[in-house]
Image 1: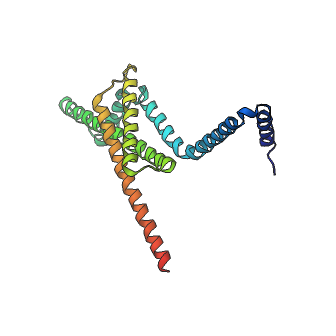
Image 2 (image 1 turned 30 degrees about the vertical axis):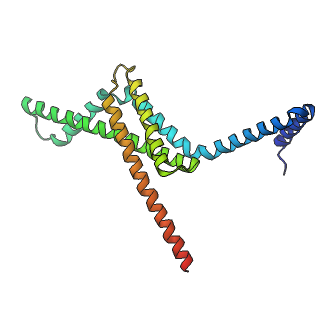
Image 3 (image 1 turned 90 degrees about the horizontal axis):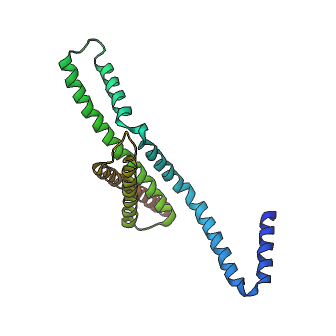
Length: 206
C-alpha cells in the first residue's frame, strides 16, 4: 500500500527536478543524504538514548540534589540509629563516631563517582559498538575520552553551584570509573564472542 505522504513528497521532488533539470543530480544527492541521515538516526537512537539519559541523571546529581549536605547527614543519622539505638553516646564517643562516619560518607560518595561513570562508559561502549563497529582499542579509547569530557564538564558546572565544589581529583576518580566500565564491557564482549563460537562449532558438528 502506497503511503500518501510519501507520494506527495515524491511528486513534489520530481516536479522540482523537472523544473530545474540542471540541478537534478544535486537534488537526488541531497534527498539520498537526507534519507541516510534519517535511517542512521533511527538505527542509533535505541543505543544512544540510554547513554544520554544517564548523562542527564549525572547532571542532576551534580546540582544541589547531590551535595554533601543532602547526602552525608542522612547517612550519618541512619548508621547512628542502626548501631546505637539501645544507649546514648557520650560526647567523646559521639565525636569519634562522627569522624568515622564522615570518612565513610566520603568513601561512599567517591564510590558513587566510580559507579556513575562505569555505567556511563558501558552505555557509550554499547552505542559505539552497535552504531560504528570500531576496533576494540578505538572503542575503549573513545568511550573513556567521552566519559572524561563529561566528567570535566560536570565538575566545571559544579563551580557555579553554591553548595558544590569542582575538583580535579573527582575527574580522575570519574575516569577511573570509566576504565572500570571498559574492562567490564570487554569481559562480557569476549564472553559473548566465545559463547557464539561454541554455538557455531556445536551447530557445525551436528
